[in-house]
Amino acid sequence: MCPICQQPTDQKFRPFCSQRCADIDLGRWFSGQYRVPSYREDDEENETILPQDEDPLQKG
Image (tube, rainbow, N blue to C red):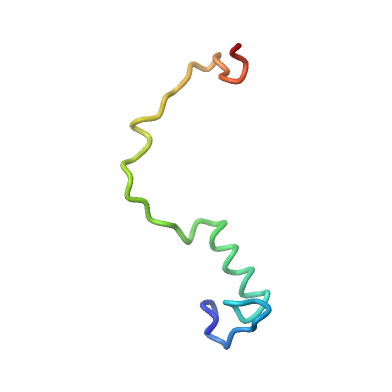
């Protein structure tokens, strides 16, 4: 069964029934409707912030 519309799946678009449902699913991932849970602590606390005039790619 297609996870989007519950119709029988088509081998060509598996696990979906059509390109339309596959595109709907992809759009949901891009828009952030689907999320993979993370069990890590929030990374914002450990983030290193560089001064605005310092470019790590220009060091040498």
